[in-house]
Amino acid sequence: MRARVRAAVSAYAYGETLPPTRELARELGAPYEHVRAALGALEAAGEVAIRGRVHRYRLSPQQLHPQDTGFDHAVRRAIASRQYAPGTALPVGLLSRRHGVPPLRIARACRLLIADRLVTRRTGHAGPGYYVTNSLSIAAQAAATRKEESKNRA
Image 1 (cartoon, rainbow, N blue to C red):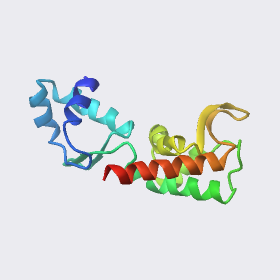
Image 2: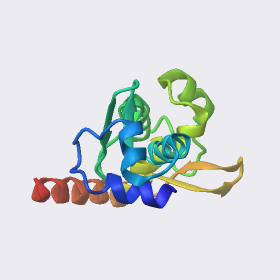
Image 3: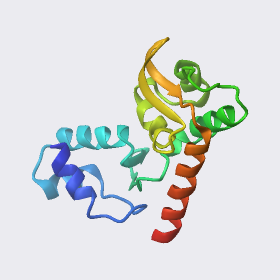
């Protein structure tokens, strides 16, 4: 069901408002509950944002979910200021509470940090989790490239 909902959502432009869940379910000929669950999974993956009961829109691959903005900016600032040293585990529990990111949405919140190579998901000295990478210059290059690609698309 998730693949069918993803295909239906991909017909909409990034940032465009999606139809109500009931309308999407009728369009797909699928049960409302299944479509709602699939939309929830797409939100967890950072493909759509759902704000309240009526405002749903498609996110671009380089766009943060609105709930993740504070988390992302705080981690980037802390890495840049060396508060989180290379190789150390991110305190995701503390960060999730501080920035209102539900624990089940940490993967979504770290998606762009991983894409920019600031953070990696692995098993390290503190167990499985998100760790600061060793090369900030590579991360800076990746972020600049992603920003340039975003400008070229617009």
